[in-house]
Amino acid sequence: MKQIYLDHNATTQVAPEVLEAMLPYFSEKFGNASSLHAFGRDAKVGLENARETCAEVLGAEPAEIVFCSGGTEADNLLLKGAAHALKSKRNRIVISSIEHPAIAQSAAQLASEGFDVQTVPVSSEGFVSPEKLSALVNDNTALVSIMFANNEIGTAQDIPTLVEIAHQQGALFHTDAVQAFGKIPVSIEKLGVDMLSLSAHKIYGPKGMGLAYVRSGVKIDSLVQGGSHEKSRRPGTENVPGAIGMAKAMELAAESVASEYVRLNDLSRLFLERIREQVADVTLNGPEFSEGAMPEKITRTPQTVNLSFAGAEGEALILSLDLEGVAVSSGSACSSGAVDPSAVLLAIGQTPELAKSSIRFSLGRHTTEEEIKHVAEILPPIIERLRRMSPAYANARR
Ligand code: PLP
Image (cartoon, rainbow, N blue to C red; front, side, top):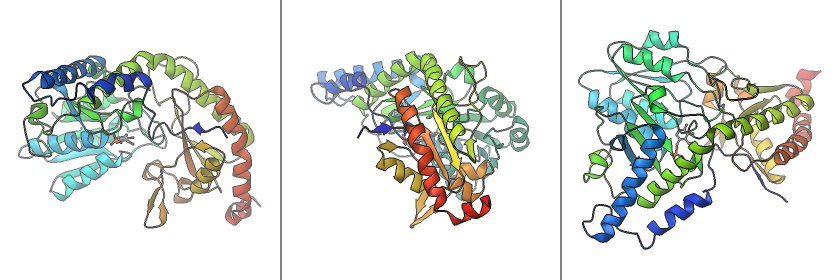
């Protein structure tokens, strides 16, 4: 049976070019980048070249790039690091209601330390309104953190407008761009953010590798204590192969972002159209897909199709598709044997029942039209079968 992977927002396979670039740094160039001898110097050159590439792709300076272990660490480092550095001056932190747990839980930790954490709600499509953000940002606000693109529903925020609101009050702005980079253009200059998080494994790079962008002049406290690596912002011997892989992955993703946007957007639209033709009671979570070329104002990522199928339980759908060789996921979290509905879907106003009937298809670099058509063919009978087994759905339709 052919396997079809439609879970690229969870992770991606390492690109052959990325693997090739990394390999020498596991073997002959294995040195510690802090060592003074030739082995160390080789590793240091590789590390600093990687930093330059990452900075260039983002439109930043190399000194503004802090390598770390992934999106989760970058989010923790930037949110807590900036909050701690500003603690004696400003006490408020503002996040959105659809942040990844790496931000939401870091904010909860800051709240337990005495910070005044405020959460800005989102619209039914997942957008943060400038007015609602303005109402929460004041001259006591240290930091606003709002993700660029959402991992579950794909909504992309108008970051420059939101940045302006924070800056007007002298607050810093951080964005988690883990799910935006490689799918929509990400430029530090255009966004105007002070801090930004990225992860390599979402863009065909290695797992356990990420970076934190910190604008020159912005102070962040380190999360851990140790040596002076990464200008003491992230102590610990650097993951040189990881940095090399991340730089290569970023370069490749940036090169193809415009063409991939159109290709993936077309495939997502085709999928959605076929499903809507065949299945009743289906809801697209997040904004509608636009037609054709990449629009001036991007409102969503092109590869994320999150659908709710009333009466068909999400976990059953995932397992049924898995039996057919198709890998997808849901935003629900399994905690102590029970399935909790996705916090993102609840935040956009879904009922817990509908939220539990949702699955996310996330397309990627290797997704083909043939695969999309195949999934659109096998999915409707699965939904039909699950709905027949749901007395609540059958009763509601009577
Ligand atoms: N932020 C977002 C929006 C994500 O989707 C993810 C991963 O799912 C992360 C952060 C965490 O990244 P990592 O897996 O590299 O820790």
